[in-house]
Length: 435
Image (tube, rainbow, N blue to C red; front, side, top):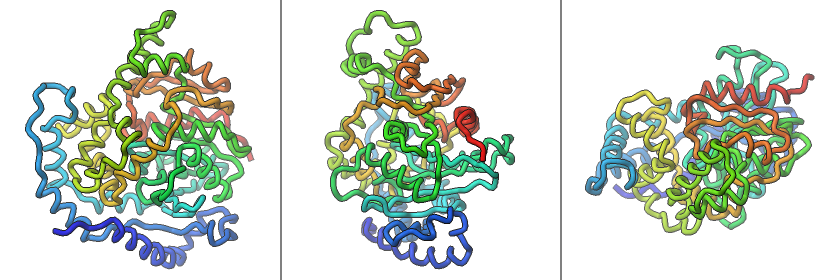
């Protein structure tokens, strides 16, 4: 079976944009947007979008899976050599026998999707407006190896809290963009699309949607982008919420990155965080490769099981959770959840383009960025590191909310959507303005 080239999907996407625009216009989807967008210039147009992957691409995927060549079993009994062969075989079996991409496609299309051009690049985003008066506009940013798939579970609870055990006063208008080079956003063809530029683009997006005030939330890359929105501090921004704070003092960050002995004078909580950082930096090989040689990862565009294996091995706790999920344990993230995300990467051929964000970045993930706006922090126990309150207070001088959770990890919105939603509500509750 010949390969389905990415440009075929791109052409189909452009064709669908035109068809979707006409069809959805008849349904008055434009009424979902603030009036400002109706007067937008052609370059600023907000175009309705629906996902409809060609069947030929799915046929090609099934063919490639059927011809997968697997390696021999690892020589250890733990995860120290990466994703175990058992888990890889379980992923392959479920992908071939129990998984249906069209269900994921329907879930994405069940909410309003749009594309708009910002700074010369098409940006895809979900935009769901709440029915509740005085809902607070919120932009949520995913990370790697994530996508909008991560946030689908939180849209309903955030936009319609009364249907999910919450109060109307906690409602949000939710905007979830795909990072440049990810999902259905455009792939940068020149350098320069680092997290600072993404943050600026997100501010432009919220202004283009007509919002006069908004808040921002993020984890992983989304945490870095959200911090930088806070640094840029547009007047419309009320505050930010992060579940992966940039709170590690620079000297601690540098020492842990180097694997140096623990500095003297740390509290027990800070010592535990230091150990977590040392462990993470020792095992963050994927980020080092993407940060230096992203184009070398061409195999991610050619082998779906190779792409899946690479994406599963993000961090120790998440890999263990996913392995348990494929063993049949209820872990919050299901096998279908995992394959929804991986299949999105595969069908959009974004394994390499997404990796380039690491190459573009010049900032330390966990070090303070100089955020002065109000900040809310939620600390999940299986995050890459648990930010101590002492570090958070110094890194974010306007810290308005800090809470440690009993459960959850790096992909908190995906794994623990209820806890995550409760945290977003609580973190921003004090920043809401009436009227």
